[in-house]
Length: 219
Length: 213
Image (cartoon, rainbow over all chains, first blue to last red; front, top):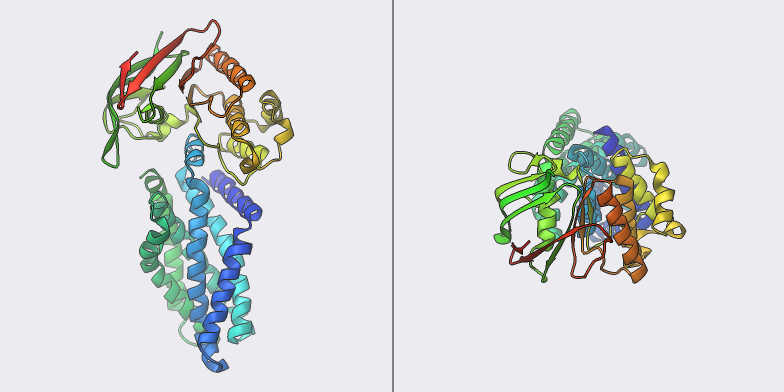
């Protein structure tokens, strides 16, 4: 399983490096969305700063939806699907590999967005750095959940619209936990409960993915 | 000679539509079988059923000793090599990267990649992305993978599409060679084929059924 996961993750990252979809399409969209959110909040820096963690997670979610669709599109052309299917790859390994590659891509995107959050929305830089572990955990949980829902919707004709409808309710607890944890680090508040929720989500989505990804692929 | 593939009243239904509607078929180990038929006759679906790419909805089936009614159809895929209509593997990876990925997935020695690429006359395209290859060259990458993998059952879906006369003769040679080495070859084609002295069985399909064999 680990061998297949490493193989798939390397392949997905190599394809991303070649196609530059993240760098040339998804990141510019994310930065523009963050800028527009900042403008919509008006000129008051304090108000923007307070909304910063929430806006960061909204934009991360929008970018995640694009990246999940991209991650599944790599596999979904008929020729690729049939050729790869006859390799008989362990579905649990494929799930972990795709989720790992998506996590790395989302971490890179989040790093750029965090810079934007500090620069445009005036969230405290030093405290944002302290919040990085919770942000990394919530983004990893989003990627795991997204890989599952991506597999579920990829074979449908309307996958582009179906993915947000199905995945956003599942993302909601992760976004709340991530935003609350980020805000708690920056403005003070309870942190432990949100960390617990993130850790439970990571374990739950990893386990469900390992067990059910094959069934989802085949269906 | 023992049967490599055996189907009895096999039915495949996808989205409520019968792709294969009651096919009975027995194919001997090491044979070459050509599947004929008009577009939509069920040729590709039959190959996909045999390759474990489509589930058996009804009836019975055994492929390379794997019972399609009892076992996970993914087990069948370990025994088959697939050459489809479209390109093989990933568009954004180079020819060498695609083959290396496939070799790593099945623990096959990748040192043979340059040898098979030379055989399919693609050495000069080793580091070209798949999406930059012509349709015929993509087909040759698929053939290179079959040569590397040497599967027990070769499933070739219209392998002569987009291939020139020279490529066609080359492919016929490869198929004859595979059969001689014990592999069972099934291919769908609209063309007259020449495998030299090898005996070829022709099956005709219409409406998801085998109408003559």
